[in-house]
Length: 616
Image (cartoon, rainbow, N blue to C red; front, side, top):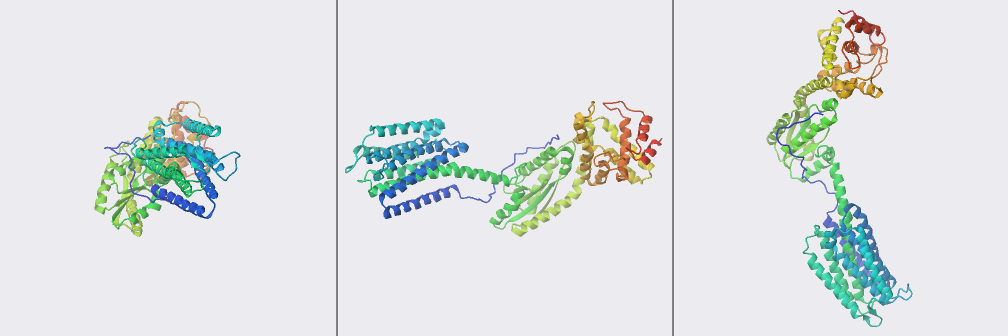
């Protein structure tokens, strides 16, 4: 592989800081939107409370709370696979068990009469148990964040805690919390006040914690605790389970759940998925090879960005790396990619942060110099071309053709400037590109010679024999030189063959032959990319065709094979026979000519073969 060396330090591709269109609401706006939805839900519940019996209101609001808790569990556990957020997982698991107690509380509530033997005291005890689990789920967040407790232990913790509370209630060991006709017991009020105190302390201390990097998590938890405090205070004041304060407590409870639901939705789904989609979108407007903006950015975003700014001076430059296609065809795309990456790094180094650098094609780059006139832009372009010219690659003078045009930013003006810059770039390319391409051809032949020492002599001698045959056929001097040059370059396609294949001593197998027979096509591709050699490309392509049509690559026969290719075929075959090969000794000139004569009319053009055999 070709190695590229650049004088001076080249920095890594920068990530341009220019904005692209947002396709979603900012996270803070989403939070407000979600909270407004819950506020609307509260209003609806208040209407339900005023129009319908309290039991219906209670059932609806508890079912809503259960639904929120279950959806919390689903969101938290599903998002954990991607976010690995132990905090959201802990909260989600906790609310699953809270949902269990809320469900049993609803079934045992006064007036439901669904479970035989269930009393209002049981419903109140289940309510208190749910609130204890809720306090735990919220206040242990900092601890869970620092310890990274596994999901199994989190599940076991809530399962064990919930089971103890449930067993105490079922067995009657849980203290009495409500007495019909009297109301709440002292125990129930004390527990409510203790929960309020703990929640209040949590609000104070959580705000001072630094262990959780995401402050939005702590902010949501503090709001959830605040609504929980309001809920618990309401429940310390009601006299009857159908009391208005009881209804208000349920509404505050639902708001507390809602804040947590918004937290898990935003942190577990909205933000991660927004990052994913943002990354997908950013990748879609970035060139994967260079990290620069790509054609899609140019087509869909560039005009939009420039339109947002007030009219400013604008210079557009179109750059084309000379000889890239030839390098790809000759040495492979890996070497071409290295060249593109090196040029992109130079652009990153020399262009300003506010300039937009876009790869709009294989070897074409567009540079938008914002706020720069043509003089300022030309100064930067001069640095780019100078730095690129210092690249060393076995003596090949790599270069870039750049054309620029200046104007004022605007939709129609941008398109005009791009077209004008492109026209100027192609004009410059007419003068600079041929030198590069001819140098690449020389390098390619040198690489073939490096792989196989015999080809150094072989190619030169084939060219001489082609020249002699062409003279013998009476061609004009210019045509003779052209055929001789084709003879010297006839094996340029071998640059893509393996070293082992070119120097193999053992007989070639089928795979070897398939690879070897590709070299005329590779040679054609290389030569056709260079104007000065384009006409020779066809001669090289068919120099392994046979007179009887059994040759390759197309199986042409007779005079369908270009005359120049028929000349090269004889010169190449003769030179191969009189040259030592790893698998055989060379023939004498007389033996080689006798073989040419024997194959006349089958492998070779009989007229040219006769002329060649009779040459002195």
